[in-house]
Length: 360
Image (tube, rainbow, N blue to C red):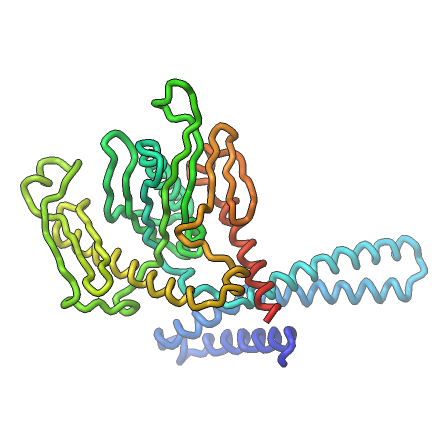
């Protein structure tokens, strides 16, 4: 079996080889070939940098040990022992980081996403909460420099949404937002509650990696496409021109409706984007279900039916039930300040994946 350090030496050698290849004039002039090499190099970059830091920390360890073994001066001994402890702790941290960097990456992590937020139990307050979640994700996307585009929505009569579907486009969108899927619960006093009682309601969030036409082949003969007049807000146009699109995927029974755009063509295009994403997600879930129960328990699931999070407004607290951790400052979080929560979920998944990999 190849040892960890043999594997790291091999990765570092390949990284240097790629740098040399990309510096050659004939390869630099071949855009397609250069891009392939550059992508491979970028995939190794993080691991190589951590490995170089690890080797530096290990050298500092060895140097400190040499001083301790051959030095009589108390002051120098004290400094060497301090350096040994510091470099040993750093080496331990870097070794753990490098093991995590070697774990297989989720192939969907760099994809754009389609997010579907729907109101759950709780009546009008559930619709308001669905709107709050949409705003939270929109503000978070803005902070990341990502683009948000509403694909379809069903606004509630007073406030919020019964359903809102939107695309988030940006580097690594799925890697950050994939932890949001599941049932979200809110506990707060509604503005309409005269007695000040705390009300509990829910909303569901689905996060689908955006699928390209190459990922999902959709046979046009297996689609039923209906055109109808859009309903709800939108001005006079919604009553004059039939622009709303409903697509039914006959083999699966999946139904997608889009009516937010005034163009029938644009609504059809958006409906197909959502349909491809849902079909791609259905295939992903099918593959996930084939993983053994013990493996799934180790790496976690984030299935849509799970209650993943509670937003407790009276106590200014968000609790993520998957990791049993609470975060305070709900106004900041609801304004898009999700980084601390997502970082904690990412770290937890990495630990579980590492434990699972080492257990094999």
